[in-house]
Amino acid sequence: MQVEMVIKGLMVDPITNMPIVLLHDREGARVLPIWIGVFEANAIALQIENQATPRPMTHDLLRNVITDLKANVDRVVVTDLKDNTFYATIYLQVGEDLVAVDARPSDAIALALRAKAPIFVEDAVLEGAKTLDTPEPADTDRLQRWLESLDPDDLGKYKM
Image 1 (cartoon, helix red, strand yellow):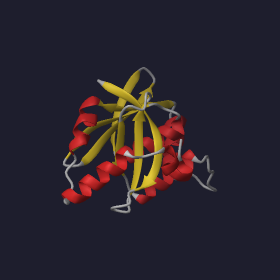
Image 2: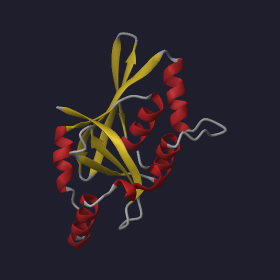
Image 3: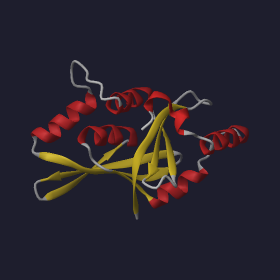
């Protein structure tokens, strides 16, 4: 089963200094942190803040190509978690056909924001994400406590 998620915020992991996009379900009961690259975080942040760029960025270009080809982004789904790597699929409505395109979750999310498409996560991914392996047990405990203690004010200027 798929769970619809929304972006709770975008922040930096205090342990690894890597950006994290936080997804949560509509009720706010489940939170999924996905570590992403700096450039993808920037693309997501620009859209969250409705910042226009002088020229189209990669995700804007992709949205424009999809639209110009008379297709639309139906939804994006975070589909799998293997070896601490998340996988996603972008579903495009092309005429009568639904076309599935493999993608990184960060790119899929950046595109979904631009296309105003819903974001879903497979239940199995939500369950599997609870047991992500990290090299240092002390860091795992510290990160888990930090994620559990998140307050909307902790999300900084990117809070939703």
